Image 1 (tube, rainbow over the protein chains, first blue to last red):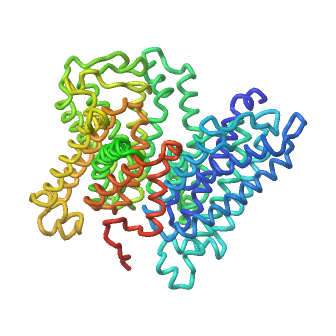
Image 2: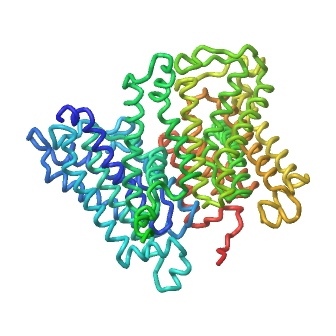
Length: 310
Length: 316
């Protein structure tokens, strides 16, 4: 068991973080807004944690104190939330593809800033971020409760007034407005909540990865998180969770299959392809997924199957 | 800023801006017909540069499946440019058949098509890396035959040297823009494309086979992307499979600035962003990449329909 955790610990924690990032992108999508801003807030949260833990909270102890990590998560969430509010209020007047493009621009501007500012360490980034745990798997102590709490909140959110307002706006913004729902208020709320979640995850990831640089918040990252949600399922939060886990693990699983030695030598090219062509397979899955599973793999209908038979 | 430097930066800006323009034209054509942003456009741009490189007799690096291979033929630059871009165009058509047509038949949300185009981009970029490796290439030395490396536009005492390749890029791009504008506005095919862009259902009632024109649009669009890729690659070396991603994002800024779906808008937007970038002071050159996106973000907030775009009215 210990061996299993030391081999796969890092992957398991990455999967949990992937699920959380999927959720942060799912939030604005609940109101029908395709926002690709999550990697920007994720990168911001990571930089906040990296700067605080290497420059401000310098402790003499061997392990980075846990309560300071929690404090960093709080600050990262707060700052991301405020920035989310500032960006969200003007940007969410835009719809559909315009909002997607605006959020891409936002992420790129943040990326260029982090590449050029001194405090973010320029292109090299910040490294040697102190570790609060002995082994990587122990990050689950932080990541797993966060995921469980988020899932409970999402479960509730989809059933209370605010969540229903989100869904109403997604289905028909004009009709929702006519029913007395203020679309701008709820859209900005969903966007800001997503920003807060992405910022908190960034703070954990900075410690988890030990280094943080401008590569963490790029257009590629936006695309990957979007895949989590859209292929996982964009109609229920479980889709984002499953999508985030599966798509984080998939490249590693493919590599594992390739290295397993199951392939006879005449199939060596296939093993080679599974190892080096993982991202090609990833891309093909995106295309196939959008064509055959437009609602994603996990849809609300899955839970209704049992009831229909009555 | 002294006058010589000013002219150099002006021509730098026009040169890169004109490539932005033809690249963005491809984006905008697909947008005006289908209402989607094709995120694989940047990948096709890269592909065009690689096709031309191969046709000119370039060798593929040391990594990847095709390492150290060279095509048996060695074509002159101009011919390679046309064939290479046409091959990029054919890839665009194939992409439309495989990744876009099924979604259109299902009547899917256009945003799903955007995601599908993203999948295509991931496949193309990584396939290139798988086949020819990730290192950068330089075009074979004889690309421009006996042309001088730079032409002096000033006097002997006050030289204003401009690189020949930049002048070539500007001229080729402007010729392409002129041909395309003529094609869209004056020919039967162009008018049919405009009719589909206006209202696909009515156009098909009038006997226009919209499917055929969508294929044509994708060919032209991807041809332009491939052409832009080759032109940029001949000015700098091809910087690996990821070469097109930054350019693809820049192209988004260009078309939004000019107005989504507007052809003169794409040209104007491209030239403007090229010029603004060229005049970023050297001490802030690190921020150059943010210029296009800064402009884009402000533009979206102030005037989302772009400089030359039509105001969009929401249908109830």
